[in-house]
Length: 171
Picture 1 (cartoon, rainbow, N blue to C red):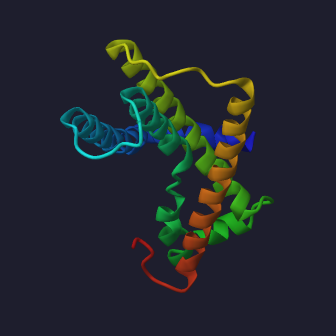
Picture 2 (cartoon, rainbow, N blue to C red):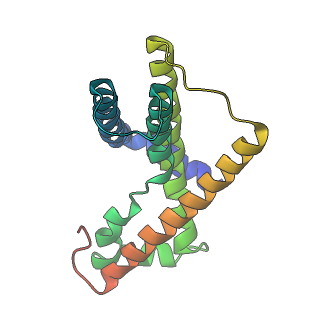
């Protein structure tokens, strides 16, 4: 139930979702266009990578960046410096768990946007992404994605908690 409340909260900030996704999407497409141009121009050794391999890699990167790159450290200033942390400490859930569910809802929406964007690109441009994954590789991919999200979230949570000792964690 708590996760669904955070999921509803995501839709209050529709433009923020879209901007984060577009930023990640355009950056990845620029890299993809660069490598396709370099491959067509004959520059460099690509270790026998084909257009299909390069395209599949960067399309997977679009989905992965939506699913894995967390951004929850940005509101640490309000939570710690402005005293809003007390609001979380009086709840019967841990601060880590509340922020985890909050970020998970954002990542699910971003991941769905990534899947839709990749599917649209594949459909419109008739792109071949290579052979489909086996069930074993798909399960392995899902487990690695879950572990990567947890690691990314935990690292950013450590950055967030550093705001207790520093005044600016924006980098």
